[in-house]
Amino acid sequence: MSKTILVTGATAGFGAAFARRFVADGHRVIATGRRIDRLASLAEELGESLLPAKLDVTDAAAVAGFLQTLPENWREIDVLINNAGLALGLSPAWEADASDWDTMVATNVTGLLHVTLAILPGMVARNSGIIINLGSTAGTYPYPGGHVYGATKAFVKQFSLNLRADLVGKNIRVTDLEPGMCSGSEFSRIRFGGDEQKAAAVYAGTQSLTPEDIAEAASWVISLPAHMNINRMEMMPTCQATGPFAVKRQN
Image 1 (cartoon, one colour):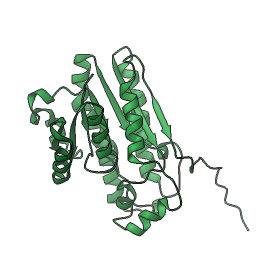
Image 2 (cartoon, one colour):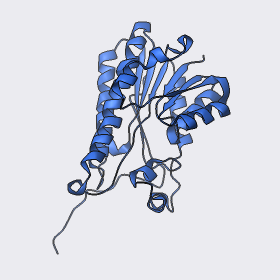
Image 3 (cartoon, helix red, strand yellow):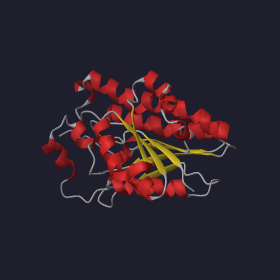
Image 4 (cartoon, rainbow, N blue to C red):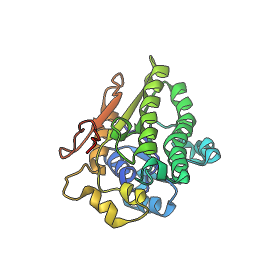
């Protein structure tokens, strides 16, 4: 059955892949983001099944009033995809820029919370809904330079599990989708301040996951029977795996 799906951060990467996949699956998509020109292009590509809507998840007032800005027949959200997020920098913590930390927390944590709070009451009132939060393997496995980014994704994982604790017995599902190495998005370019060479080096010699792979996983989660909840889905490409403990030895 066709669902109305709200996707944050839909201007590129995972978000755009989600929009394309969900429309192909027969759903209606509200595609949000800050770059309205990209959303307009996506609407031209996908037609009337996609509604572009400008939204900055770090703007608390805009998020709180967002539903009222939509056409009335688009306001009942069946599926929320909390996709908007970013990583900034890869330097060690003591060399980090405080503003980068603040931006990651404001987007990956506070923005996700505010969007969830704007949409969840309607789901509870209808006793129906699905929330998919975009976490990361970085929320489980630490790596040098991942300090605050990894911490924000660990928050997403725990918040998702705690939402399920609140929602037990209700027909509302919550999934934390946790991709590992994934190319084909703006993630690394943004992390390295637009340095295309550094961004490309992250994926050199690998066959990484793609945004379409992540959209495939989300499509499967949405298609499951209403009584079946996927708490977490961790995924990596076959070229990636968890490593041994780091041990620094004295010479």
